[in-house]
Structure formats: C-alpha cells, structure tokens
Length: 395
Image (tube, rainbow, N blue to C red; front, side):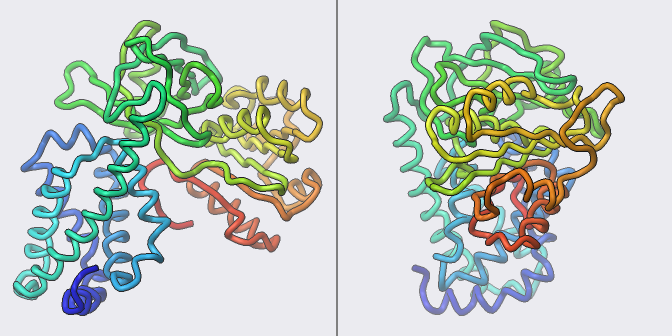
C-alpha cells in the first residue's frame, strides 16, 4: 500500500486528471513510441490513430487515482488489464519504460503545477500499481507454462486449414509448429497474433477470439475482413495472403469473458463478428452443460452471417438448445427468424425465463442497445457479461 502522504497527494490530483488526463496520455504515447519504436510491435497503432487507447488509459489512470485508498473496487478492471497484458507478453522491464514516460508526460502537460512532491507521489503510486500487475501476470505466465503443451510468451503455429464462414469472415485452424498439443483454454478467450507484413516498418499484434471448442485438438480463430476507412491492414493480409502451411506467432490464451457456473438459462447474443467468442461458448455448452441455451445471432444478412449452419445443426441435436437469426438488411431470398433488430418481445418469447445469464458481444452501439434493453426488462447488471473488441470502455 502506498504511504498515507502519497494517497493524499494522488487523490488531490483527481480533478486535474479529469481535466488533463487525455492530454497526458496522448503525450505519454507520443514519448513512448518516439523513444521505444519497438513497442509499436506490441500496441495496436490503429487505436492510437482513433484516440481509443489514450482515452482508455486516461480513464484507467483517473479510476486508479480516485480509488488508490480502496483498490479492491478496481478488481474487475485489474483482471481485464492483466489478461490483456499477458496476451501481449508484457514484461516487468516494460513497466519501467512506461513509468518513466508517463511521469514525464505529467510534467510536460501540467508544467509548473507538477511539483516534485506530486511527481514523487505519482512515482510511488505507479510503482505500487506496476508491482500488482507484474505479480498477477507472472502467475498467469506460470499457469500457462504448466499446462500440457503450455508455453510462455509467443509460440509458432502453422495454419492447417482455412475455411470460409461468410463473405467477410474466414476461419484459420492452427496447430503448434513443434508438434506439441494445443494448450487448453476457456471458451470466450482470445489469443494475440503477431504477424510480419512485407514492406512494413514493424510487426503487428492483434487479438482474435478463439472461436472453436476448447476440447478440439486445434485452435481456430475467425477473422473478419475490415474494409472500412482505414482498411484493416492485418485482417486483409489474413484474407489475401495467408495460406495453409504458413506460420504465425501466437500469445497465450487470455481474457476473462468466460462462462460462469450457473443453473440458470444462458442467452448468447451476437452482433456481427461478435459471434466468434460466443460460438466457442455455444460449442462448449453443447458438450458440457445441461442448461437451457438460446443463441441469438444478429447480422446484416445471410451472406455476412458466420457459423449459421453449424449453430443450427447443434441446436437440432439438443432439446434445450435453440438458435434464432435476426437480419436488419436481409436479401430477398434470406429467411431469417426475424427482420429488423433485437427487441424485448423477441427475447421474452424465446426464453423460458428472463432470469438468465446473458453473454453478448459485437459493435459498441449494438452492445449498448442490448444492455439498455436488458436493464429495461429488469435484468441485474451482475447477470450481464460482455466483451469489447479493442480498448475497454463504458456502455
């Protein structure tokens, strides 16, 4: 625990962070990458361009400062951050680099207001937080190593099969290059893919959900081709250049968006490519659970709907399983169960009880709509579980 004086000073800076937090974190990232360009291999630079990562870091720093005397309230955020860090193979040495640049960014943005006393207090507070993360992440690394086929950091995998799931999503099946077993993972988790693209100045790291069943002897990731502006560099490289027999590096399975033990019905609600972690959960439940399960799949139309046949095949084999599709722009030949958007009426008529556990994933506006709908139906937030693709935020 930080000293009483440090806690007093850090909490007193909360209003300052509220006003200048994002400016501090933008300055921090600028310093970090100028001085340590190799770290561009770790961070998703698209999130820097859009401002998502600086904003997320500012919110995290603000939350830490406001709760430095009661860090237990940040347990969920700490879990998410350490899982993300472990997927990226973050090392203790990186915390020293981050700390030095963050403190300098505070000095630069606050100017004369950043007295030595304030900087020293923040240095102590940062080290306390860094030590917390380092210890948790070391435990994650050790657990990952101790599994059958386990490893620390990154490992080379070979692409054994590529399967088209829709017009925009393809699955890549992966096995360790050294022939060892694939390590176990929890349905809903993701892996970091580290990939080199010819003529690029650095390698690229992206997180992709493991979309297969944990009991399978291969890993599967399902990648959506991002065609917006800017076009997804890594996703398009996957679709246009990678082939069976190619080798990529993967981090350890990470993430805490995983199934929790319950006797209640389980509702999985997917929006677009958000279906990938939920498909893994669905397959896991099929093999290992007796719960009533409703899988709601929201997509633009049939051509963009991944896993449609496989999910229905499983539902036909298990009495308590059901799948419904909702298309907001169906083609004339499509036959979704519903047209438009998910509504309370659709949910209420397809599940035996609203007292269920809800897992949802998709674009942020979609998840916000789902959460607001569930709240309007009286579903407690504790029974809502969701995952952001990218820096975590608020719904």
